[in-house]
Amino acid sequence: MSSSNFIDYVKICCRSGHGGGGSAHLHRDKKTAHGGPDGGDGGRGGHIILKGNSQLWTLLHLQYQKHVIAENGGYGGPSHSSGAYGKDVILEVPIGTIARDAETGEIKAEITEDGQMEIITPGGRGGLGNAHFKSPTNQTPLYAQPGEPGLEEWTILELKLLADVGLVGFPNAGKSTLLSVVSAARPKIANYPFTTLVPNLGVVAYRDYKSFVMADIPGIIEGASEGKGLGIRFLKHIERNSILLFMISVESPDIAEEYEILVNELRTYNPELLHKQRLLAITKSDMIDDELEAEMRETLPQDLPTIFISSLTMKNITQLKDMIWKALNTA
Image 1 (cartoon, rainbow, N blue to C red):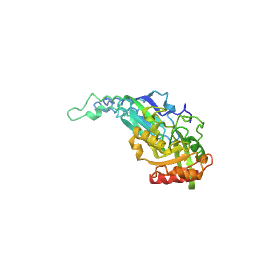
Image 2 (image 1 turned 90 degrees about the vertical axis):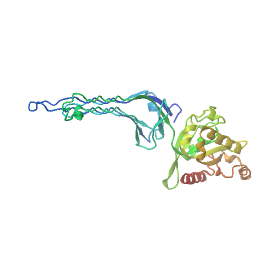
Image 3 (image 1 turned 60 degrees about the horizontal axis):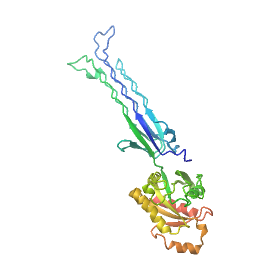
Image 4 (image 1 turned 120 degrees about the vertical axis):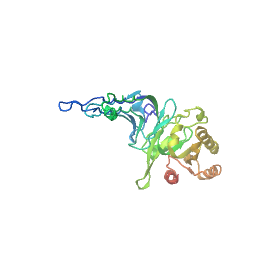
């Protein structure tokens, strides 16, 4: 997906429908002179609803839809006829979308499954007709309830990509290259920093027709949690990944230090990210021999599952898939 097409944040004004008023009708026909109240209830105003759609990857289709307005409910009629419900507005969104109140920040809904539907702005309730208010002491009530007004509020829709494994690393660590060789995704690849400006998703085929989803997160640099580089705009996508695969180039002068910098940026942004299972892949390992690889292993964290890979020569790519699959099933 190109940077111009990937939208993960939109702010829209949602206005649900007003409820229809109840009817204060009194029944009259040629055979019944005093039939009593028969006013029907008003219809409910239309809701504004979010619906999960697994075929969507971005909020682009909502970027220019600033106002979403649902239909008002119909008025009640005679002979206990209820007013029609206002037509709901259903907004289809990608899996992983969160709806927040723009003023309070309160989460209204969270879409995590395909087809899941959540009301984010409920329509007004329809008013009761006068038939509900008759009693032995008031047999011909001449009043009915008005419908409740709908709501008008600004809502923020925020997308956090759902993926099984998220690729975390500095720019030019080989994340996009790995995604391109293990999946059908075709992210932009070039030999300069910040080639990847938006997250990319790919489905990685595994043994026995199994698969998992891998997300390439734009490069993190020291100070990203404070707004440097691409800042925290894309760190939020890491929150929805089951496991984190840290990727550091074998060209790094100090792999252990670079790993700690990455971990610290995640800790500063959201300490809960450190509870996720972590793996470490040392990329571009076709540039070193086995002896140097053994020496480098001695300097790496011993409690962290580590593998040396090369997307160019496919070195240990199958073993990496095995490591990820095992981690996913124990996470």
